[in-house]
Structures are given as C-alpha cells and as structure tokens.
Image 1 (cartoon, rainbow, N blue to C red):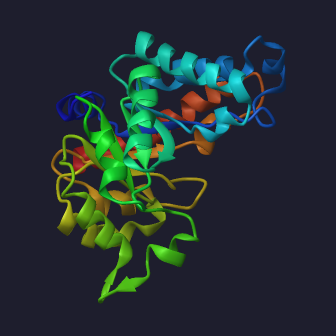
Image 2 (tube, rainbow, N blue to C red):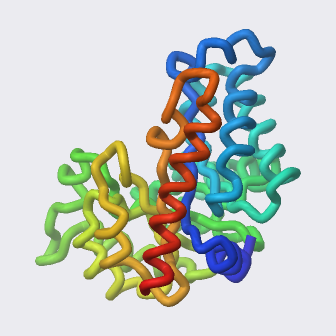
Image 3 (cartoon, rainbow, N blue to C red):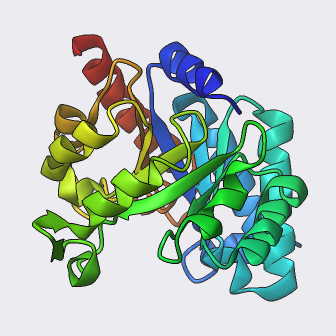
Length: 272
C-alpha cells in the first residue's frame, strides 16, 4: 500500500485509528470457544464491527504464535479476510523482527509474500543490514521501533550518548536507510511531548503510536505534538476496543468504542 493510499483513507474517513488484533482465548467471549476457529471468529466480528471507523489493523504475532500452527493459520485467515473484504485497510504485522541480513530477508518474504501484510514492525538494534531487506519490497513498509511506550524503554532508549538520547540517534540513523514512503517509526503515546524533537528529525514520516487508552496515553497530546499536514499518525488501540465487552455484545461494544475514538479524531482533524 502506498503512502498516498494511506493518506486518502485518512482524509476520506477523517480517522487515523489502527485497531490492534490481540486475541487471547482467556479474554475473548466464552461462547466463541465453541467455534472451529475461535480466534478467527473473534477477529472477524471485531473487524466487521470496526472497519468503518479505522484505517488500519495491527495483529500482534505473539497472540497467534502462542497457539502454534492453529494460531498461525488464524493469523493467515485474518489477514486474508481483511484483504478480501476491506482491501483499503493498512495491515501491520506487529512481529518486531530484526536479524542478520539473510534472516531478515526471509522474515520479509514470510510477512510480505506469504501473509500479505502491508507492513512489519522491526527492531533496529542489529543495524542497517537487519532493516534493509524489509525496504526492498514495492509498496511495503518497515515500521522501526523508535521510542516505545513501556517503562523499560528508559533502560536503553532514553540513555544519553554524546548529549543526545539513544532513541534520537536511532531515528536519525534509520531515517537515512529508507524514506517517508517505505519507513515509519513506532513512538509510544506515553512519550507524547518527546514528539517535538522527533518531528525535527522526521517531519513527514508516519508514526505508529501505541499506548492510547489502556496504557494511559492521551490522543490530544499525541496530536498536539505529532500531527502533520498529512496527519502522519496511525494511533493504535487494542484492549480498549476489542475487549470493551466479553459478552455476546462484544462486537457491538467494540464498534461503539472505535466510533468514539474515530469521532475524537474527526474533531481534531477538522480543528487542525
């Protein structure tokens, strides 16, 4: 999917919402466990209920790999369903891959050619040759971990090297490997004020922003410091939407929560 296609969807819907698809069989409604594929059935109903209000979906691989082969099959079916029924939605494989070049190349083939994801989250710790293979596919994206929302990000990402935080070095260096048409960065919503310095380095790149909602991040703060003329944000919400209810009304409640977030985004866009 191209940058222009993403921007067009955002403009059309007045939303930059990304819904995280993190199915946990201990949390999904119990009646779904009777289905042949509970994970896919849960995802399918969530997708149908929220598609009108979001522009992106982000399945987190850990929530599928935990169930072995059946979980991977559920992931394949989920992405295939999105691509068939809602082809304008941007699909992010949240897999956080990053290894030596030849291994990264195989990861890229797996997620782009086999699973048909539009993007994959990438850990840049091993350097350029671990990221570059993900940038060699047309209309596909590497989403590099820049500044994450977890408290442990302080252990490394926010340590200073030569008077500059490590995450700024990472973003500045990685931005030279790709461009704003094939690379995005993860920046956690709980670090919203730090977007000021980040935007000085990458004024036009899209940012994937987790942490709004359950993790305490503020949509208003993220937009205050991170919004661009093309919006430039994909704000992810997972638990707040997909687990808004664990009853038979789970899809309806998910729809309502997604609509609420989309309406908040619409107002921000209209007032920008």
